[in-house]
Image 1 (tube, rainbow, N blue to C red):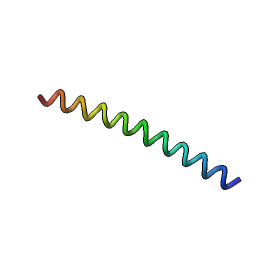
Image 2 (tube, helix red, strand yellow; image 1 turned 135 degrees about the horizontal axis):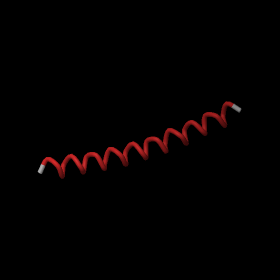
Image 3 (tube, one colour; image 1 turned 90 degrees about the vertical axis):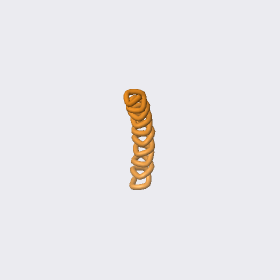
Image 4 (cartoon, one colour; image 1 turned 45 degrees about the vertical axis):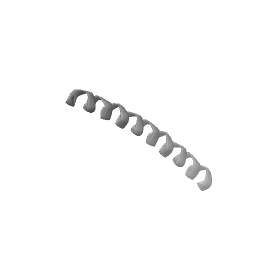
Length: 36
């Protein structure tokens, strides 16, 4: 039970990290483009 919950939370953390990095990259690109 607890092991499965841990695996699920790790998977959720990884997907959140991926989407956060994606948003961060897009925002960074937009900011760089706007500042030119």
